Image (tube, rainbow, N blue to C red; front, top):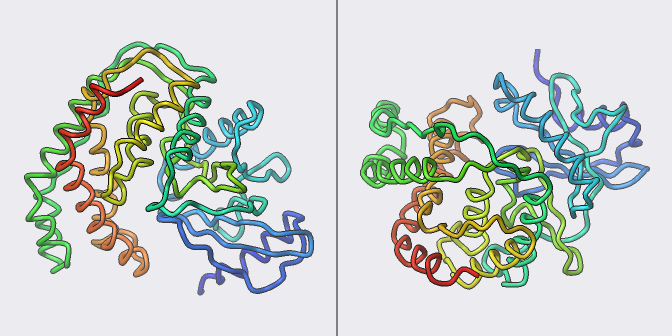
Amino acid sequence: MKDKPIEESIVELMTTCGFGTVVLPVSPVSGGLMHRMYKVTTDCGIFAVKHLNPEIMKRPDARDNYDRAEKIESLLEKEGLPIVPSLAVDRRKMQNTGGNFFYIFNWQQGRITDWNHISNDQCRAAGSILGRMHAIQPENIPRKEPALCEINWNGYVRGAKEQKSEIAPLLADNVRLLTYAVRELNRARASLPAISCVSNEDMDPKNVMWDNGRPWVIDLECLDYGNPVSHALQLALQWSGIVTCHMDPEKMLAFFHGYLDAYDNGFRSYSGVFGLAYTWVEWLEYNIQRALGACGDQTEQALGISEVRNTIERIRYIRSMEEEIRDVLDSRLP
């Protein structure tokens, strides 16, 4: 029996949840790398509907992670942070229709900033939002051994060669770099202070919309408790251009200015944990698996191949900029 087209599931979803009769067509919205988003107009209004990746939802811990994120989302709402929360129906945010899982949002006016034209003021505003989030309930926690990253790059090279995948030579040429990146990442994780707080490590520029200069954070399913030092550094780097391989230290500093004005735990040794910038190796591993067909979906596989290329290029760039960024972190933080 063939699966129902996703558009039909969305029509059924909106009616069942009481959001009105859908006015076709249901329009895909670009931007997501893991889930798929649709603009849905009904006779009651305009909504954004997120179809959660079925492969992600098969993971044994997926529902617990989403439940935790929903609770934190409600906390951020109460604290007045500028977020776009999912809508609850009968006190339930995640909806299940025909085995597909969805979140429904009011349609947010505004635009996501072009990655190549992010201003210092936007970096400062984003840093301030993250700082306000971290300031809600930070706490010192017992020190424990960090979850270390372990990736068998040579095993992936062999698997890619066996499949005659186009990513095989790219992986083979970069094994030494990727091994270095994992080592530096693990060293940095072991050096982090034992602090925990409410956080959103996915609050990069693609997940903040701007409406008349005002920021609104979207895509909140990654909300969790985490280390503020780790998330502040990684997001400062992303807002300053690491993702596009055009890093501007002034933007990184603007992000930190906004962040430290909102929340300051006294930590300044960010250069000593710079290896956290190599967290991209874990995104790389996920996309290698997608590229090698773990998802069983040609669209997902093609996206995996594209992201393998993009992510390796990004890791190369981070390595080339490492000393310069460390120097800025040592000499110019507020």
